[in-house]
Image (cartoon, rainbow, N blue to C red; front, top):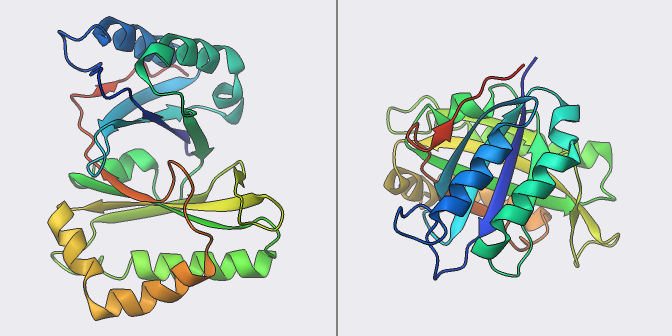
Length: 232
């Protein structure tokens, strides 16, 4: 069974760099990340900064089961420990079981990872969401066969709906894509093509605008920034 993958996004206080050994936040960060990784069911975690906005820290955690992910104590303690390091904006957490590949398989396929979240009104029918998913898969996998194209793609509907002021219900469904690119430049070159604009434009037109912390960004994960506890 594929693991449950959680992504946590945190907008850090720009005056504190927890990854700098000389920073006052370094010990807090080490304690917080170790606390999270030691929770029952945690299979391992990685972290990176957003390329476009380095003040954003992104943590990817693999959980053995939904119950392990949903256990409140570990997350609560992690947030309490991290509180001095980030702004008064809320920490963002979401989870899903990705297909056809796990998130870890995609993150290890190429250096630059695109994380794209498409938001739709929660009132959409199953037919509408299925059509959007099919269109998104078609566009995201269109360059897989090219030598300079995307190297791996996976996707999932996030488990929880997202608050959204522009949705008639106040809630949005979230479709997440993870794409492994050889480099940021390669992805930008693909996005600049007429073919991509023609295919992606109608998809974006149907979706709600991004909300705080969600949308499209890139991150460069590495094994150096990881912890593997492999608890089962």
